[in-house]
Length: 321
Image 1 (tube, rainbow, N blue to C red):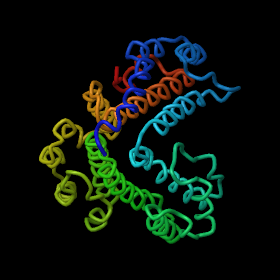
Image 2 (cartoon, helix red, strand yellow):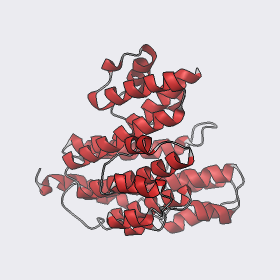
Image 3 (tube, rainbow, N blue to C red):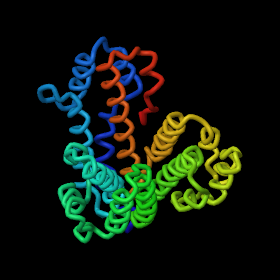
């Protein structure tokens, strides 16, 4: 597509950026004296009023508004598809685990999605994976039969995460968004770091680990696995892949690694704030909203649990504005 084909979408996005929460807004939420006060602050800033006791609907509603905006204004559906595809894989995980746990999978479905969760649930219940789109069918069948044989939730994670990482990378290229490709490379690196280290700590074989990592993005997954099994630091492998900003977190706490990844994605998105052509400004806005909603969830859940303000401040991510 021509870069100018996104001019209308970028104009719509720019008009909505003014409503994004700033760091000062997040600090105001953190300082709120109660959960209800925090919710009132959000509704005063234009977030939807929660219905009844379902306070977390406020986050779902806000993300739904973002998805609706993007789906309405982008000229090429492949960009929207690439942005939300990971949720289909998350729903597949939930459906398989729910089936073998005798719980209602419908309570664990994530929106937005491309494949109707009802179809995913039906495919799993009936073991008929031909009902699923091609990008889900093969890994769905493999994960289902693997779990039925082994009852290992970890194996489901490995099979589905690997397929998800590969699909995201391929679809980002198709969407013609360099920013989205970089974001997915970063996310795949984090996923592979966690997979390699978990395989070591849970006593899996090197061959198992090599089959589990995605081989997507810039990281040399074979070197990553070799370093993990040799007891060496993973930081040098990550640096060699050109991900120096992530490297210093590769051998530490997973929560800190994930938070660093989130902040780097927000930082990358911020570099596209003033672009006027192409798909990247739309991608940047989407991830700005993802970070914003994640922060609001962190604050609201912490308020509901009476977590001290100082701890909440340590958990929230950087903001886009």
